[in-house]
Length: 356
Image 1 (cartoon, rainbow, N blue to C red):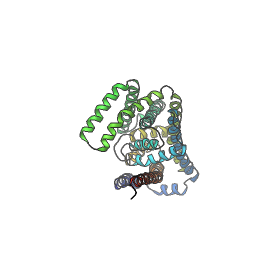
Image 2: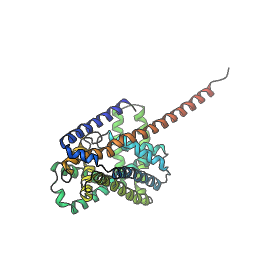
Image 3: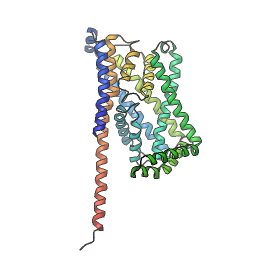
Image 4: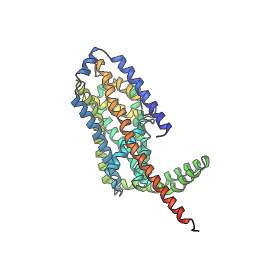
């Protein structure tokens, strides 16, 4: 890990820690101590297991979607890339850093860059579709609750929904009119090539045309021969978000509170959409404040701080810890690949030296 990544981890953790301390300080009382003493460890462990299960569903989504394009990516590799992507998401605004990690790791599994990009972007599309559908149902079934929510949260949710719908429209347009999109992307790449000159930029320009063809071909396959991957991708996307959202209910049960399943699903949906807006690294601070303002409607003040703390421990700090471990595996592999390349290069140079 370089110094820049370490700095962003500390910034992200600092944002989150400061807000959590403020929430805990303003909600802590004698009832909070009683709640800690009566903490139900069984439900807490179930929440942890469900968190792991959600990551397994994510890995299965990547594996099946890649498989529909003709690639056989090992499940172990898919799971490791999902976990490594958590760290990048935790230190970048809107969790956008996870996409490049997943693309790179699919490429390391012999998936073409264009195909890997199509898989990762289609993941975002499926996330958008599932969250939009969940949002529509939640607003219909829980109209009385969401109408009384904070205006800023509602605006943030609708803005996030608009961004996701926009991405879906752009990708479907790309699948139907790839030539027009390709011309636009080529102009953008050529413009970038004139601004940032160098070997890296030349390499990107040289391979961009081929990989764009792979990308658009992959998008078309997802709607034709790859429909099976799209179907199972949707199934695993639904299971992923359903698991992620139910974790909050298990945490409430561990604190001796009712699960508030329907309300919690609505709140988690709003938070998930708001967190996609690139405001702070890993949405730290934003997530804590959103959760606090929403769950204050249904959870006693003495329990609220503890709930938000446990929730962020599982969905943020857990990401950083396991993400670091997975990233370390990738770092070791990259060093091994580099050593092998250096060894081969040295052997070739040795053979080229004429004997005296």
